[in-house]
Length: 121
Image (cartoon, rainbow, N blue to C red):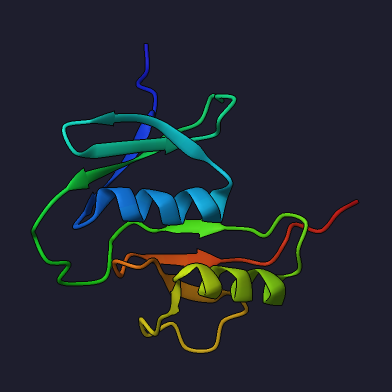
C-alpha cells in the first residue's frame, strides 16, 4: 500500500484572506473551515490535493522550499499575469534571472510561478 497526497498546507497570517486570493486565482471554493483554518479546492470535488491555510503568527523568513507552478487556462501568459497582479499577486525576484515564466508572490509573500499555457494539439 502507498500513501496519497491529499493537502498542501500553508501557514497564513490571514487564512480567510489568503484562501479568498487563491480561490480567485484557481476558480476554487472554500471546502471547509475549522479552528481558524480554511481548506479550498474545486467545488465539484476531484482526486487531487486541496490547499489548507493554517493560522500562524510566525513571519515568513526566506524563500519557500516548495512552491506552486500554475499554467493559464483560456488566457495567454501576459493576460494571466495581469489578472493575477490585479488580484493582489506581486512580481518577485528570487534570483531566477531571465526565465520564460513569471515568478510571483501571493499577498503574504509565498512564491509561485506562472508558466506558459500547454500548447494545444
